[in-house]
Image (cartoon, rainbow, N blue to C red; front, top):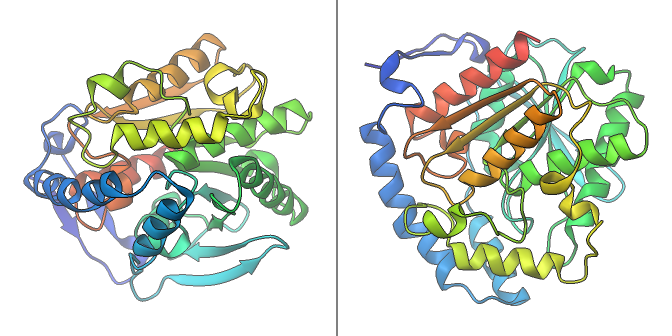
Length: 324
């Protein structure tokens, strides 16, 4: 059985697991309970929300109350950019020469650093480096293109601070996974040196939601109502031409990309989006590690406060980053 070992400092908090927590194993009891709760709360609320700008804003306001706490000893400090803000998260002893630039999920219209502290402090502890979580501009007031501009600004700022590109990891989940991959394509397009590694958790790669799993897993996804995500993606892409950077993650050339870690679930509607990235990146000669977990919720590492699989997945991310 999985067991948790507590130590005083966050960097010494370790989650050990055996085959009971492997990606191929059935979900734990905690995960099954969580899946039921999130399906009957967050998913149901999103499904009932209006497919309008006002509906997006209302759903965002409701979710803004969802904040996770970091344990005592984790250092959190704000960082201001001209058009947006961010926060630094440091858990335990970290290597300041390395950094994770993290782009949160939330369909490009909700989410933020305070909601992600349960992930960000664990990621800092596991990777042993600071994590910069962006509070990038959100829809409907802004567009995914604005979010990409913010991500580019943050990446350039990290390089200006003295971080070598190979010492930067870009990570993100769901819409943030799309943003992370879009960022790398944008850097490649302008001829900039790419970061050393990239981590994408349940990335929403195809904003138009055309993959088979958007239909096949519509009933089994515990978090996302498929019809709502499709409406949202079509709204974002309605004025986009075929060569728009919005489509880079699903159609772009991955040649020259750094090592890529993908984490996804068999039962989420974005399952095939992760498969698409893995396939295209491997065809381009990229080192790809894809962990597909059985029956987990969409972006389940974000819910590590509640499920052991989330903690185990973050431990895997840390190992992936420390080994490269």
